[in-house]
Length: 366
Image (cartoon, rainbow, N blue to C red; front, side):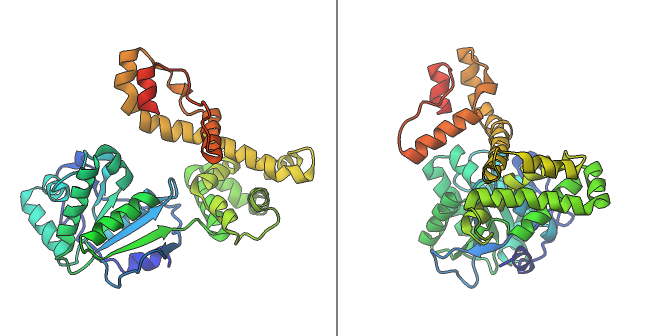
């Protein structure tokens, strides 16, 4: 199942001119622009449930950083549906959806929104279920899903599309099923090799005009460089196996990996020299794929530290950190710490990984 197939089956919504949002800080918004570099991923129905023919709710799951929010934004843009980002909203609970609609649209328009949802002419995208669970307790989250079920049960269409990580998505499906609501459970698939190649080029072309010009003027060398680095990464993961191997697809089809490859290629002014540098990595030819893999993974670990954890965790720690007089934010979640934590998880043993910090800060951080 492709992204376009799913989008085609969703209704074209009235849009922000007909149903304007009056209060934006609530996390509810419309998307006025699509992403030029968007590549629609394949989407697979879960095999652990029986998929309904006419679901009241569609749940889309994926591992972290696979592209759930990007997918949600593109659907919202193409279909002019409102999107509610729970990462920017307050903790959810009883009547959260009903209250959010009233708060965002205003009392008069909220009635129209409710009618459009019930008639199957409008759907609401709800992104970041995982953040909602973190902010709310178990009872609050269950009450939130119950409110969705209450609205969905009388709808003639599919009024809600929910997005979250795999475990959260499956838990949400179980809650809806218990409430008698038919729900689809879909999973975003990693990019295929062809999609990965398209993504890398599109990403470079849209964030770096100079790199786009180099690609246009030196297309052959660019393709050779792109293919060489992907080939090295593939061999590092699965040896000389085919790209259809699941392990290779899961790694090479993972958006942060491709983002890193795009950044590496965008910075290259001479693709011929880049190819020579790749071919010279490692003391022996058999070591080269692993050396390239190490380079890319190190960049990914650095990305996780700067773009993910510090940004997400720092706001939650600032109060207790200030009370303890601690401010060593750059020490948090370093590549070495990440490696140690992963090793402990894989080996099933405790490996001391936490950086030095006061016990009060450490308790919150862990």
